[in-house]
Length: 164
Image (cartoon, rainbow, N blue to C red):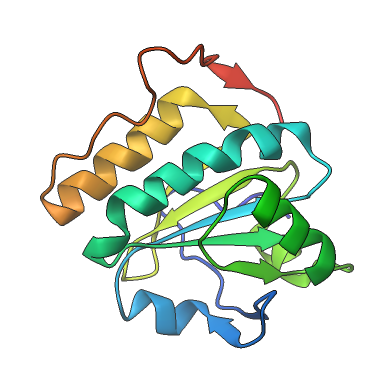
């Protein structure tokens, strides 16, 4: 099975959060768009990417945009990762055998899916791709009718791409 592509329907799922509770794709989409970021705590590219995903979360959370990290590790390790990399959005747990990751066809981490309220995947990216993060920001800004601050700061040396 290949990775879910732009224009396809996101597979329905529900996962536990690292702090308890259950998170359902259908319930989330009833409130607005959702950005999911699949990751492993040991992945250097995930570690590099997540502070920028957190910036997106901070820029759009007041507008009802949701961001979820979906960890392929246990809750304890995922909690440590969230603390170390400043992640404040919900982290969901998809431990081995990675049922939800398999539904989405994840081959590399990080892999992100931007899903519209209708359930259609608007953008897919894996690894760290500067242009894709900017495209996610642009799509969210247009959806929310806002002009967000810069995602990448002028003093940051940000590569165009880092493979996952």
